[in-house]
Length: 265
Image 1 (tube, rainbow, N blue to C red):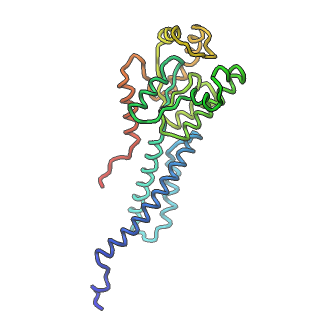
Image 2: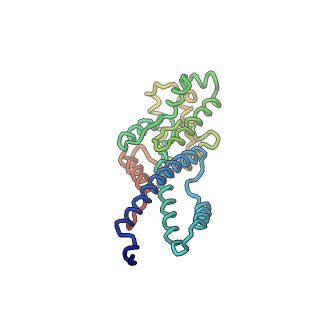
Image 3: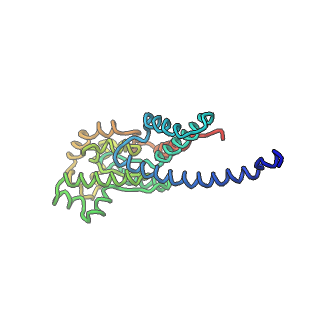
């Protein structure tokens, strides 16, 4: 038999590669499924997406499995691409949290953002009412503020775990435990900055029961107690005097920045 007869044909080699690619795709899909689940746990436990030291350690372990030394740079490129895709997927699942005072319009703006982007909307106060079967006022009256804050924490953890949501938070969400850290680790925080005089004006037309607000003086008290926390936690400060398009543009920019980087192949 001649040497040429012993060599595989181009079509034979391509067929082998097609089979390998089918196996790789199935394995990669499984890997991304686990990456999503890991991302959910990271968000819920307020852990960062990126860990360069761990990536370096994992890459070194993978290279030990490589039998052909001349392929090392290509294998490193392959796994670094996988790491990049995995982090991009986890970033894409992060939430947008609207933080700020009661009466600032967080729920209304969250709904508008949801309609404009197609990202699902969650209101933590509404979730607490749905889960407990009690109104916010009833929870405060029967169980106290500490119980309410714990329900709120659970609602925020669930939102963090689910991911890819627009979340309207309660006005006092940042006052409990390390909620600020949870929000920062699992998404972008947008402070809805409504001036105090407008909050006081909105209160005059408000018919919602608010356990911590009995009169206008309570609004002023809470505003000065919380304003620093809102501002220092925020990734973006959105003034209600600004057009909605500015808020929407910020969300779109975040979504774009979370996507995969452009490549040459």
